[in-house]
Length: 424
Ligand code: KG4
Ligand code: ZN
Image (cartoon, rainbow, N blue to C red; front, top):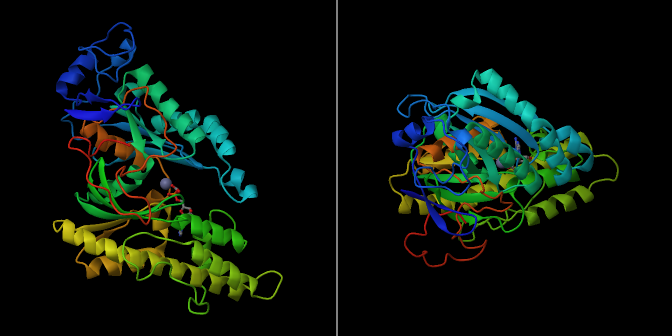
């Protein structure tokens, strides 16, 4: 039986959703008090939630899961089934609302999620041709992210779960990015993961649905954050990654001698602030006034090449550690918004092949934030019986590997037996 960490820090046994649980759920029942009982799963907080019966667990498409993503500036909903078929999905970008501020404004983001999530959810359910009663679970990003937005999505999922008697699946946003490669390419565990998004830059070994071992993280900026800050500096708008990539394609990466932070140092940690400063200094050294197009392209190309080179250097250490500790591993996976960058994907392909690994890079639309990955992570959790109680708390911070040392630190001794794999 799986154990889940409750918000109060105690672990509570959570029954896997086996056929017996389904039979129990199929029986309509009266409203029962919150708190759980031997005849009622701990996550089941209302009698009205226990009908109608979901699809049998051995049906090929089991389970059918609704996913909700609201952790940053995209409101997204999706319905995905156990075969990996995306029955419906929708992503509503808030770009226009944040653009005047040059970055995401948390309060604007939360209000916008609140305004749109219900409509989006209704739309994907209609497009999927599914009723809420036919769902096998409701998944939402429960962190890490901007807390106002996370609360909106998680509360919405809780409401649906409670009203329709469905298991709630509180998904870690980073785990959702990490597990996407299993949806797109059925990648088996273990695999090495380069997670590069707007808020995170990490190298992890993915050992199981809920077991991650972090080998390195960033000391300062995340890779996507560096793209966004450099884009802002160059007047390219937000989000910066796609704009920098477009300009870089036309530029000469060798014109400016930008540093490769931490290159040659041991370990898998990253740093990008020195690179960012070097780009600023190079931009300031140019004639005043608007940038000439060639200068802009060369700055973007030089920055992107240095960042990719730096990522590759740090990843090299990760690849060596992974192939030594997990010789059965066959895949390098790249995930998160920056994984949409085609120059990065090309560089990673060569590195993976040099170590005898296959590179798996999900399609760009599944690299940036979306709800398909949240629904899929929910499917993976449901299959393991990792169901969450309806009082699960939203988490602004939620490390995938709670025992990882801080950036630049060394790993502490292994936790006591039984604790490994629980959520931080
Ligand atoms: O995963 P994501 O959509 O949101 C977070 O969880 O942070 O990642 C967004 C980040 C932004 O910083 C954006 O500039 C970057 O991904 N990004 C890119 C590209 N597309 C998105 N960075 C480089 N090249 C791209 N093509
Ligand atoms: Zn993300």
